[in-house]
Image (cartoon, rainbow, N blue to C red; front, side):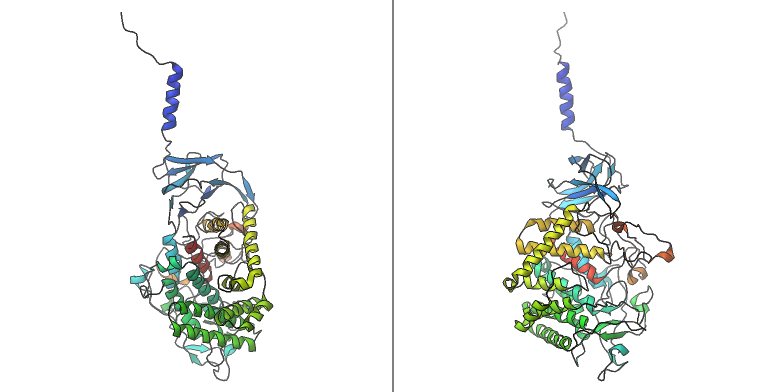
Length: 568
């Protein structure tokens, strides 16, 4: 008689199979044709920060997979939300609760994958260095060497030691065609001009970042010629431009020449391949006030670094500029007929008066400046080169005079809260509904203001919102581009920048922020048969001819320096 074998009941076998399947992680086969339907921060996310992606597909669930394809997290996708500015609908994929460090992809439908990104404590360190080092590559009048620039190196051009006084800038002591020396500084954007108005907000923003993110910047080493000299490299780089700005002040009366450039834009060549005559053009009240504000702030900065002689020179220059402006309160820049380079004209100077008065008050403590502050105050808005009152508000609220300006602080926090309210209604989680010149810098400036609001309130909601702004810039946007050159899976390759076009290197210099979607100018590439989307948030093209969307500029990178450094 055969022994009776023990048999498991069928329901136990089924339960065992289900249990084994539950315990066996699902694995996906990653394909590298990364989906345009998944929009992410293409660099990554901080371990304990909010982590959000957007999905342009009809899915109910999304997965997070590691670099081997193992599903490590899954969650429901949010409801579809339509945005009229992009012409599409997106679902939110929130994986903030996942905090394990590593390299990951978002996966939908089991077959579509995002490009890889990291989760760790410092995902933006290299980015922070690159966006700041972009200013080294923008230096005028020096060789950019292989030692410091790597494969992006070129010979000097534009020594600017024989710059002529243009007829619009001439006076009895410096008549037309007088030769002056005004070397150094930064090329402003995709061209070879140097402009005081735009240098003001750009340099100030870097100095502000040094003050607000001091510990981070003290640890940075950018491998620039000045590295290791006991100054943070952000100040070393800022000094390059500040010294040039000082040379643009007429020593006879304290007024500032508006700009230094050729009479017309030159072609897409290297600096050493141009020899056109350069001029300083017209003095203006806007340039002079922007200079006064920037130098006053710089004076306070370098005083803290035990550089009293430099700080005093900057103070004297700021005071002379203020005196010129009070004698010439409304000299607007009027582009001469024989000049066609960037204008940076501004017909409303109340914000410049406010900013300069704020900085002069903080520098000197003289109450006469406080009277000008009160008389010219306007509520805060997102800063631009021609709207600078908020810079003065920031300086006042981050100084030991903060208590004197409680009403300003209420307005500032109110503006920050309004930005958060706009973001809450935005499917793409940003605080703007306008896409004009340098829209990416507007978003970076929004992020900067939110970080200042955090500094004033210690409320984490502003940090989370600023992170959304950086996520947008780095790929979680309607175009799918990470707008910073060399950082991300899909980045600008054909920026509107003369040096980048002419250097013979396929990849652009890393760390430049492209201007971004722009609805003001739509036909800059018409001669090249390049069309742009009519949806504002997608009105961008990675094409060299597109100066309206793909140019680089010192004032666009500056708030990104602040934003990335502040979040790191």
